[in-house]
Image (tube, rainbow, N blue to C red; front, side):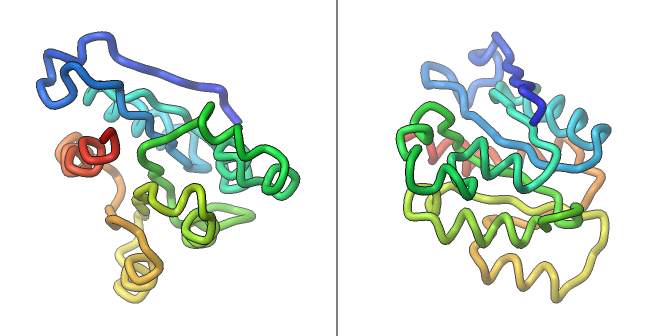
Length: 158
């Protein structure tokens, strides 16, 4: 996993996060360029961002890896995230499979998960939304797409 965490220092200038803890977003994408783009867009909204290059790394970070499932429940408080945004098409584990693992977890199931893809496949979108994805976004993401996440980021701090 890239231990890449970014945050912006001027949260009050963005208005919607003033006087509350910065939302922490886990961005998962096998493409370095896409990870960097998502990180930049999210830090523009005063979010703390951690990136992972695949689903297995994301699960490790969330404390849901195979070895961690039973023994490290305390890890979740340390790596608490308010939202997960993941690519759909990744080698090893798809974004859909990652979504299912998160939603099956008693400790992480309330965390909103957003799926993104460069392919507009209606049955794939429906499948992800039925499994519990908060939103499905088409890549390449723009700042206006990320602004749609404000509602989920604001509500997860309470």
